[in-house]
Length: 158
Image (tube, rainbow, N blue to C red; front, side, top):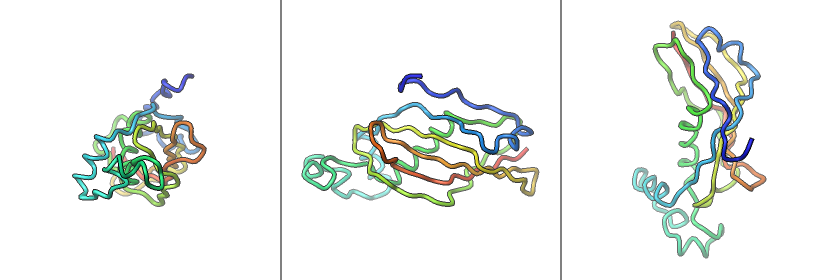
């Protein structure tokens, strides 16, 4: 499989989710992080630190280029998750949060990232629900260290 291709999306019925513990969902497609995204995120969060929004100054800074906000990179987990996984036969899908997040390497503007995911646990919850725990890693193309390592929590209600 080439770097431009994505893993096949895993789509399962609600009743099959429990069978996925230990399943590696593969990786999303690569996506470029652009200066426009960084600037828009800066406007949305009121975080205009120069290492993100001033390319000329950032080129002389510690990373040699402007970098994405860590929380911007983390927020891209959602569209990449949607590329990899879906559950049918549910009335509600909820992003339940994160148990652990580490920003292990900066993402320079222009870099490409993708996400790999392994489902580590599924438990029943009140209200005909399932609580799914997934280990997610956002990789940077050509870099040894990932950008983000997180434990991602989801709930599905039938």
